[in-house]
Amino acid sequence: MKHVGPIIIISIMVLIFTIGCNSDVSQGIFRQITQSEKKAADLGKVVLLTKSGDYLYCLTSNAGLQKYDIVLDTWTPLGRPSGDSNPIMKASYSSVNDRIYFTTRTDDTVASNLYVLDLTNGVITAVLNTLKIIEMDAQELYFTARSSATASDLSLYTLNVSDSPVSKLDLIGLGFVGYPHIMVQTEDPDSILISGFDSTGTDYHYVTSSDVGADITGITSSEIVAFHVFDGTPDVLVAVTADGKVWRGENVSSTYAMTEVDDDVSLTFELNGIEGKPIPCFFDGTDLVIQGSSVFYSIDSTGAVDADSIDDLYGQNLEATSFIITSYILDDTVLYGGTTENGLFMVDDILGETVTWL
Amino acid sequence: MIGLLKMNAYRKGSNMRRYVFPLFILACLLLPMGLYSADTDAIQTSTQYDLGSQMFTFTAGPVIPLFFYFPYDDEPAVTDMHLYTGGYGSIRYQGFLNRYLAIGGELGYAFAYDRSEELLTSVPIQMLLSYIPLQGQFELPISLGLGCAYNSYDESNYLSLFASAQIGFSYFFKEEWGLNISGGYWLIPELYSNDKLADTCLSNFLPITVSIIYRH
Image 1: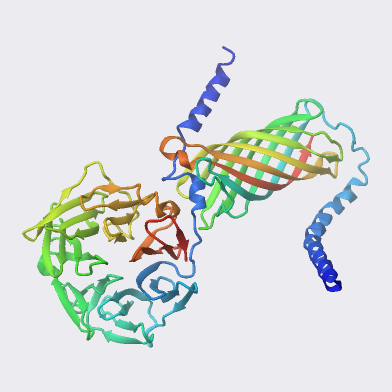
Image 2: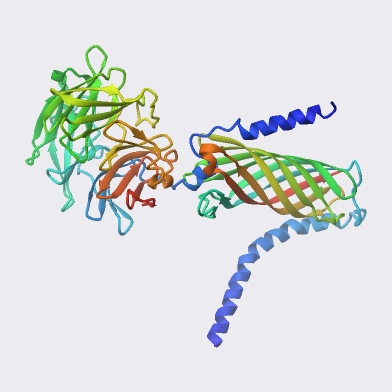
C-alpha cells in the first residue's frame, strides 16, 4: 500500500503524455516550425493580379502596386497616379484590355477615382470618376458599383476596350440588398457568382455563365464563399458556404437547385476578413481547390471532398496553418500564390512536391 | 609562396581576432572575482559538500537549435529548423545525498522565434541529478535531468517529456557564491500515434548558460 502514491502519480503522467493535454491545430509543433516562412513585412498583404512573362503583378497593402520579377527576384513599384496621394485600395487585371485598373481611397460621399496602368509603358491615366465602386475582382475586371456616390442602385460592371463602363447585371433588380460579394471564375471569366441577401434577410445567390443567368436555390443558411461551374450537360455548380458545407446542383431551366453533398462534411478555413467574404480558390483542371485551416481541400464535380491528395503533393510543404493565402494564379502547371504576410510562393508543378518561396 | 604564407598568417590573425572579444569579456568577468578570491583562503580545495548541503542556481543564456529528427520521414534529420537561437532562464535547487551527488529540481522558461516570427515557448520542469567530481574553488559539475515541458507555438500546445545533460565549470569567488558556465543538450520528444504518427519528432537543442550559484 505504501507505493500507491507514486503509482498514481506515474499513471497520471503516463495518461497525460499519451492521450491528453496536447492540443494542436493540425500538425505537430516542430513540424509546423520546419514549415514556417519569413514574413514579407515590407509589402504586407500581397494580392496577385496577373502574370505576364516573367513578371507577377500584385497589389500590396503596404507598398501599392508592385511588379515581381520571377527570374531576378526583385520587386519594382509601379508608380502612383499624379495628384492623388490616397492609398490604392482595389485593383483588377483586365484580360480584355491587358491592363491593370485600380481605385484609390475616397470618402463615401465622393465617386471613386478609377485609373488604368498600361503594362507596356507603365503610364497611369485616369479613366473615370462617376461610379462609386464597392468591390472589385482582382484577376478579372468585374466590379460592383453604384451609378454615383449618392445613388441607391447597385450593378455589376466591367469596362469595354474604350474604358467605358458596361453594366452587366442590375443587382438591385435581381433582388439583392446591401452589398453582395462577387466571385469570378478566373479560368473562365464569364462565370460570375454573386452572393448576398434578399430583402427578407435570407441568403440569396445568383450565377451567370457566358451572360446566361441562373438562380441558385436551396442554400438559404449561409453565404457562398467559393464555387466552380463544371461544364457539361447540364452544367454542374459546386459551392462552398461560409459555414463549411459543400453544395452541388445541376443547371435545369436556368436554376441550380443545390443540395448539401454530405451532412458529415464540414470544411474549416480562415475567414477572408469577415465571414461571408469570398475566400481564394482555383481550379486545377479537375477540382476546385481551397486552403483549409490545416490542409488543402480539393472538391470534384460530384462535390466529394479530398483532404489528402494535395497534402501528399505540394501541400506537405505548404503548412496551411502558418500563412494565409490571398490569391492564386495557375499558369499551366505552375501555381503562384500571394499571402497576407509571407509574400509569394511558387509550386513548380502542381503534381509535385516542390514549393519555392519567392 | 611568401604570399601564401602571408595569407595563412592573415587568416590565423583573423581567426585570432574572432576570439579576442569573447576572451576579453570573459577576462573582465573573471578578474574581479580573482580579487574577491584573494582573501578567501578558507575556500576548500577537497570535498566541499556532505549530506544536507544545499545549492541554489539561477541561470540564463542562449539556446541553440541543433536539429529535428522525424523518425518516420524519408530524411529524418532536419538541420534547417527554421528556428532562431533563443534564450533560457531557470531556477534550480539541489540537496546533496553525499559528498559528490546532489539531487533536486529545476523550473525553467525557454523561448525561440521561428522564421515567421512566431514564438515557441517551453516551460521545462525536471528532476536533476548532479555529480561534482572536482570541488572547492573550482568545480566541474555534471548533471542529468528528466522531466516534462509544456510547449506552446502559435495555436498549439504540447506537454512533452524533457531530458537534459549538462557539463559546466564553476568558479567560487566567495565561500558561498560562485559563477558557472555550462554547455548542455536538451531532448524534447513530441510523440504521436495513429494519424499523426508522422509528426513524431525528437527535437534537439544546445543550451549555453551562465549561472550564479549559492551554496550552503
